Length: 378
Image 1: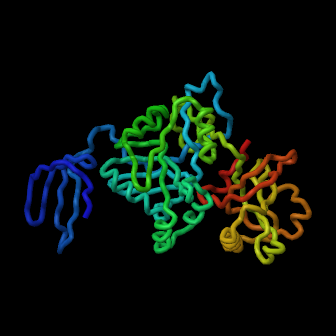
Image 2: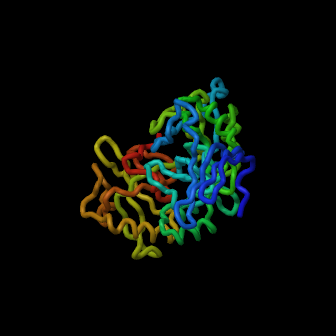
Image 3: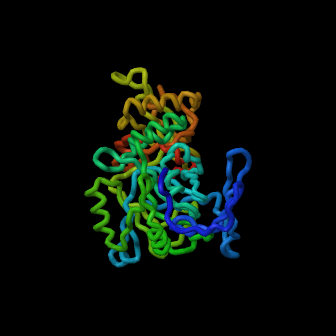
């Protein structure tokens, strides 16, 4: 037994088959009836009418707003921006209603069962109805976000394995925006006001936190993120409204290292220690002419990653390349082409003059992204 809420109640009716109470607690309040449905089973129902005429039901889907890659705002406009740390995880919009949660990734994939830790967030919020935006993250032994470690959780659907991994590789949901609260959309409120309301909810628990944001001082925040070995910062215009599914300059991601989402279009066999396994992945980006080859990556893999990639790519093999334009002959001659279904991410040094990735290193698969969502970071 746990103590879930504190408050008072007023009993209106008490019989062997029906109980009516008015609850006044810190998490739950309202008029409820509990009634027997047969045998030892009971149900509970809220009897209050909607609290106001403009009450809006919980939205079924809100596409997350996206940021563009860019520099820090200049000193003359710094005070107009808010700054958050950029977390290296999986973006997720979480819907909370009636103590239940549903977590959807950027490509609308339901991952609630993959991350059961989030269910406790619903219980903690009680009757509060909300849509939250944030990042699912796991940390390494030094307390730093680890995208590589998160890979162990991202593809798992087996319930028993999910439970084991939740113990050994726990995740935390880092909440940075509020899109809907108790029957009212907050999308048209400025970012600064949405954050004020979100911070007022005091959402902090074993598997969820609300990290702070900082008004102005972008250069200091960026340096702090570097000192903490984070990926960078997100700069958000304080007056900006939330634009679902839109990529806008009102949100800027400022990174310490270049990273690029890519579509896997094939692979080359390995040599030496990798004989009989994948040696490198062939990568492409969507362009106006279709998919265009942008290079290959052969570093950054663990043995577990290579085994997982082989398992996923084998059913996708095809005879012809799915890319438009030229693939260098030394690459194409022994390539195994695959249908462009999987998205991954690489870190790299720069773009070459002919549009190729220089010195790319593999970071991992991105099951939360669809191939047609991938754009070139510039």
